Image (cartoon, rainbow, N blue to C red; front, top):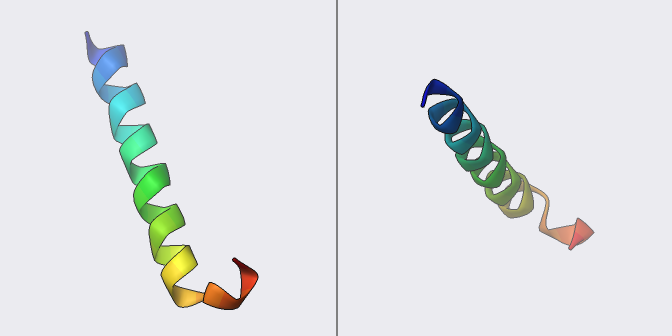
Length: 29
């Protein structure tokens, strides 16, 4: 059960950080 929470949190953090990076550096996309 804790592994599911860890995996979900990691995926959410990765997606959020990717979106923030895309907003900060839009010339790369």
